Length: 218
Image (cartoon, rainbow, N blue to C red; front, top):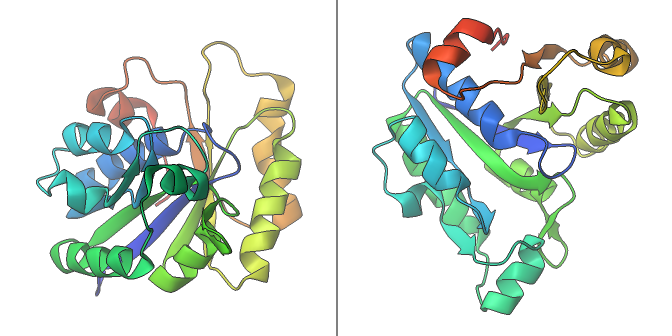
């Protein structure tokens, strides 16, 4: 890899496993020898950024990983408004530029999906374009995911974003249902977008288990 790369991790919905996917990608890329950084530009409640900093042993300050935080679990434009926080895309751009200077790859985890508003009229999709990042879409494998995933792919492509691929994240233990077994290949066939792999249900969620069970084409 000749220059630093930013890859934006977005989801077909909230709680589809983006943070787990970033952790898995981070572990696998580091195992391949890449010097890896992570950014979570926007976080509304929760401890995703804190988890990734600890789990991936990141040395960057938390405010560098997560420059915008609001305490309520709301859409960012509402959470920031209620917390009297003004989102500034240049702060994110400048922060990512600094991280890219330190690392081979920076994984950027979005808040929710493409069309989540960060401020009125400015969406995750706009931030991805401004960051000039490639996109990996995280999706559920189960029933309903064909619609959600195709909508996300179509909107990303309509906006001129580069979709690197799709990762499906298994959120529950047990035997996969018929939709979970067949949807990834159906989505690949219908969209023409590469499926990078399926993250199985991981318990415990740790580096050793990821290296043993995860095979992602990144």
